[in-house]
Image 1 (cartoon, helix red, strand yellow):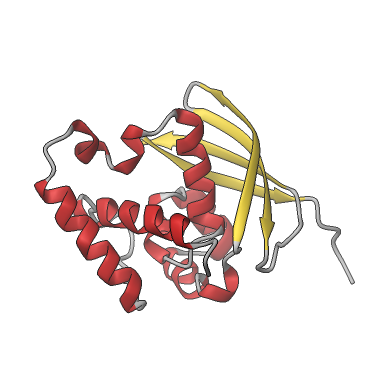
Image 2 (cartoon, rainbow, N blue to C red):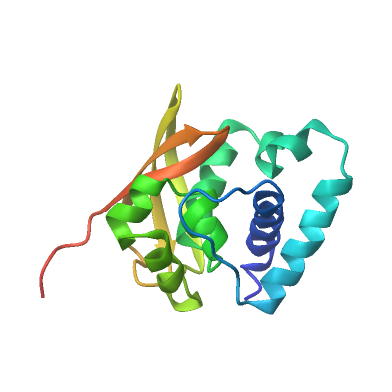
Length: 170
């Protein structure tokens, strides 16, 4: 859990930012993890009292574009927080293609489905689209090289598709 602490802190802050400005677009979800909910509540309070431009654009506004892409990928692959993995850092298209619906994504986003960490490399950004390679450690995709496509929506990089190099079949 020690390696996850910094990632979880950033993701919890992002969750707080997301919840502060989140509107309903298809389905609503809540976190059942009291620790994450507490951290998100603290982050949301910080957002409401902050007067910096970053508060308006979320935690991502202070990061370089490559770091924003990295955060989005880790938010989807290494987060057990449904608001991050199913909404903040994932397009509706990705969620529907992968899980069928947001509620399907929320039900599937549990600690056992999250990677312990994700190494993101080869980030290439072109306008409002980006690609990267991700190799998760732990979780169901541990050790696989995943090709990630992202799009920028509402000022936030979001995972739009994942393609693994894992062989199909037994």
